[in-house]
Image 1: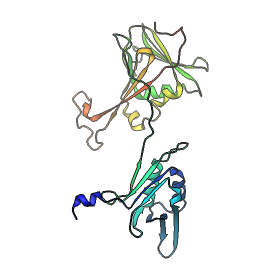
Image 2 (image 1 turned 30 degrees about the vertical axis):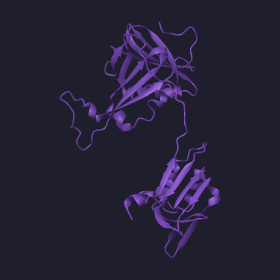
Image 3 (image 1 turned 90 degrees about the vertical axis):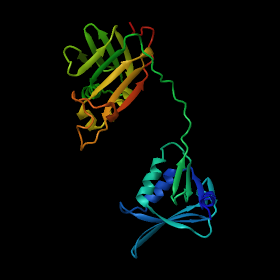
Image 4 (image 1 turned 180 degrees about the horizontal axis):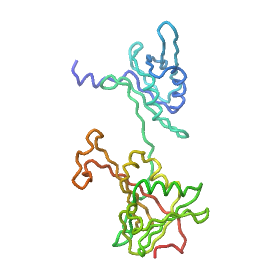
Amino acid sequence: MSSSAVEAEAPDLVCELDNVQGIVDALTSVRWKRHQDAVVELSEHGIVIIVEEISCLQAKVYLQRELFVRYEYGAQGRPRFGVSLGLFVDCLKIFSVPGRSNILEIQYPGPDMQLLLKTRIPETVSWDYSFEPAGSIPLSFTVKSAALKEAIDDLEWPGSSIQISLQPDPPSVTLRGEGHGDLQIDFSYYANSDLLTAFSCDRQISHSYKYKFLRATTSNIPGSVIKDNRGSKLTIGRGGMLKVQHLVSVSKPSVPHTHVDSAGYQQPSRIAYIEFFVKPEVEDDTGNDS
């Protein structure tokens, strides 16, 4: 039989689930140790997952075909194959989103005798985050990543907003927590040049942003990146759109000096660039582009 004919053969099973979390719960119930193998048996009646300790303990999970929104079975007999139960459960968890029903397609075998899991990402309409400069001179500043994260963390208050203000004379940046007193953090370009490493502004400007969204731009940065303490650049664009940029080193730890020039900067090929775009809160006519 030619290879093209083999590829053209229909799989033994193609089925679809609309409740992945339920299957995860069922399989987790029979996972009594971390590294555990299982046998999967297919039939026209459904799927059986068998887990056992030889001559000591056996458990079976029966997934009847009625559980599936689609169940197309074309095999002769009852095919069996082995899987890592832990890996199988972890893969299923990826497709399980709380509060959302996702269709998961399971197919066996794949081109190389794999068990295939497929899903469709729901269509979403993203908002227009095209970033346009606010003028001929950029409204931006670069601050050490650790200092930025610490400042945002210090201004935390449930449901609050953070006002970011820039002024050219004296050149400075102010982060002010709105809704709980007068807590604010100032970065002066002249007094804090070790923290505020770059500054560009030709007019006073101020915009407010939801704290939870602003915090999301720094809260998940790994400690190793914060320790590296590269600069994070914040730029205010037209309409108050805020762009936050981070640099993350992707050089190998075993060769820390590879691709580093004489000034101590890594070449762009060893740097990953991360950008966040944060919309400002709706402001009234007293807006503050001045």
